[in-house]
Amino acid sequence: MLNESMVGERSGYCKEWVIVCGNCKATPKLYELTIIIRFFNNLHFRFSHAIIVYLVREYGGEDDNPLFPNDPKIQAQVNQRLYFDSGTLYPAYKNQYNPYIYHRIEKTKEKEDKIHEALEFLENVLKTSTWTAGDSMTVADFSLVASISTFQVAGVNLEKYDFINRWFIKCTNKMVGYENANQEGITIMKSLLNYLLEFDNLNQPHRDNIYRSDKS
Image 1: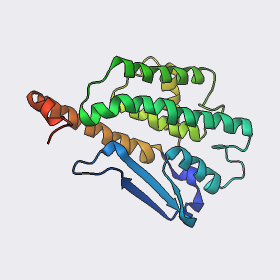
Image 2: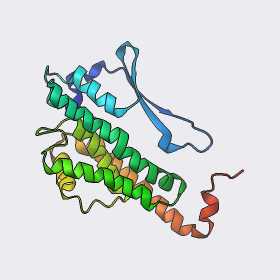
Image 3: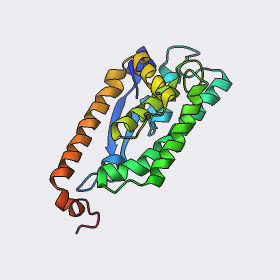
Image 4: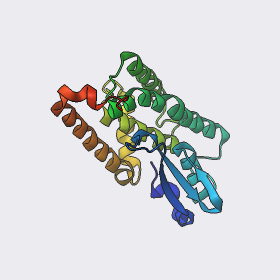
């Protein structure tokens, strides 16, 4: 999730945004979409966790931007949360929900447990920390709020995570441009998931054949 408060006035230096569909065939695999952002000097990025750090460092408008401070200890905490999101939390979600959403492969308890193991870690972090990487909002919060909002709309049960829910509400209230940068996409995703559910209900007798991956 990116917004103007992160990029700053110098965002005009950004040359172009390119969306590339990896492995697109007759039926595009939507979950394999790759976003590539190309800046001036032919600099390319493929992953949002690297992109948001670069944007703050290059265009943040401050020598010591609180979203990614110069203090090595705080940077280490921020990086730790970004790595947690990219390497543990979101992959656990993808392993369970991408096959279910796009191919209607049944969810499993084992995969759901992996998601909740990661969520319990985040819950414990927020029990002793105002934000995910300390006392101030950082790029780690922008990254993680995008993941948690996706979990919510996909149907992951977050009711028992009091600290995550309080932090999430705080993010939606404090992050400038949250509605435009994140909520609009979440609303679209919710509509898509509702449509797929209605489609399944209408075509229940033929569901197995519709979602077969080995159709000739």
